[in-house]
Image 1 (tube, one colour):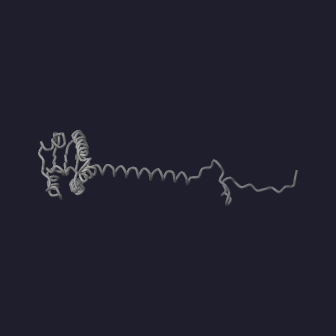
Image 2 (cartoon, helix red, strand yellow; image 1 turned 90 degrees about the horizontal axis):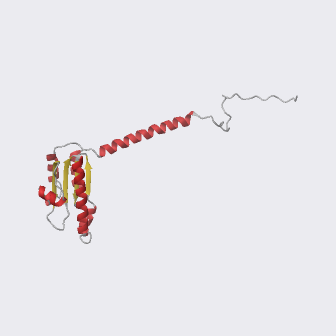
Image 3 (tube, rainbow, N blue to C red; image 1 turned 180 degrees about the vertical axis):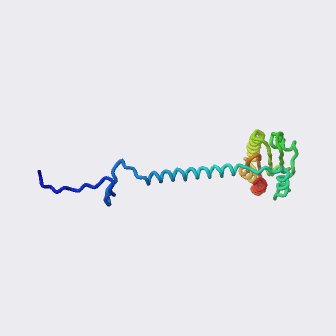
Amino acid sequence: MTDRPATARRPVHAAPRRGARRAPGRPTAAPERRYALIKWALLVALLAYAVLVVGANSARDVDFAEIQRAMATSPGVGNLNALDENGFQERMDASPEGCEGWLMYGSDEIMDVSELMIAKGDEATLDRLEDAVQGRLEAQLAVFRSYGVNQKDLLEGATVLRRGDYLFYAVGEAADQWADAFLACIR
């Protein structure tokens, strides 16, 4: 036997020495808490995003006459003509059949592409009219592509919105103001 002094062993549950490495395989509670906190934060962020998306695409159900009154007094609409069902069909290559309410204004000037259309209906009707709007825009762009730079720019900046049971389509210098007036009605 040797005369070696006995070294004191530290108990396993004792605090580690300063600067010492942690023993492998011994997880600490802090990362687990951080992970749980991150999961909850992501869940809350996802729910907030879903509420914003649903809210952005929803619309208050209003009497269509209220929308017609608001749009009739919007800037620039007075320079356009209100179109009847035949005018709607001629321009959109689709009838407003199935709509609970609709309005359409357009210019009689050949070199003026200004138009405003709002329709209220079920999903199938709005799908059909949205396809008609896209067809109208493509046809107008084909006509004005080689000349009419201002009209081409207006057509490329056309506003097409779908909110709840409504479809909004506008081309013109005041299209943004028309969109604001429409959205103010349905919020």
